[in-house]
Length: 390
Image 1 (cartoon, rainbow, N blue to C red):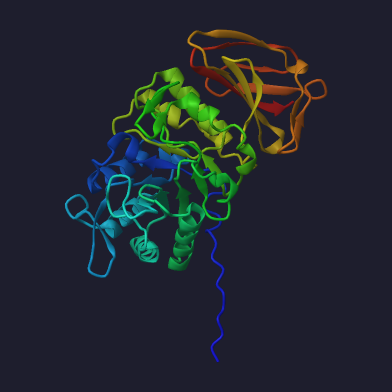
Image 2: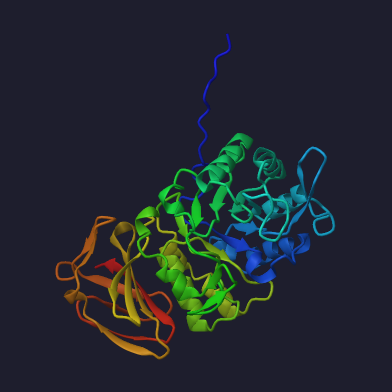
């Protein structure tokens, strides 16, 4: 007698205990990608110091696809990826990095290439055979699909293929994935696509792209859903793609504080020293990669000026003073006047009882909490401090 045995599939563990760090092709290159660009990005990630700073994924976004063969197996675009994905993965791995790829839960991707609908298990097996380490899974052309079911199917397919892969859910927060995706994916997008501007909305008819501040504001109420292995994804970074230095610094700081994945989106071969220094600021990256995995909370909101706090390991804290306005702000912060209570993470901070030394993470400034701090916060900028018990 045959007995059916249920096999419990789950997402792979241990691949996103801290938010993933890497690079993705879409923000800068769009569909204009080929295997040489991907090799170049792997080389640049190593040579720029980004790998040493913690970045590990080189992710190919939409438009790598060719056609499916007669058995339904997807092939890379023959002209743009003539060596094949296995050879490309081998090269990326030889640089000590990991290779990511892109697909879509619908019949076609957002750029009209073949999607994975109906081919989930074949595609997952193909990715595993190629040596893929990361799958970004989009949500175009998905009429009449249930998102939780569609993403669960691909999770199960990846599990069946047997190669550990980070599973990045990209349905733009439309279906509140933070409520159902913790056991399915390692991160989920919480907003529509990012655009390299400080405070704007770029309309595309039925959908919009968003600047840094609108994306930040759309995180309200989501922090309790983030933690090791399951992250709120605020989309890829636009550092080096056209904003000014203070905006890039603030953008990177916000993503670090809110434990969003840090996926660069610029041309790593041509980035300025300023851009490289922002992307490789190890003290700021450490805030993002902190083992507690607690997403920052907005502590003070004065309209154009906000204070965000984030508990860190070993009793440290990060404080971010954010200036949303178009002019510089001088701000006097009396530490002892503000008791911090985070009921979600069950952390509290009373500067009347305990003193901390603080260090600026973008400047050489330092001080302690025994007396008020005078801070000058640039327009569209931040002051980011790490506090350590004295």
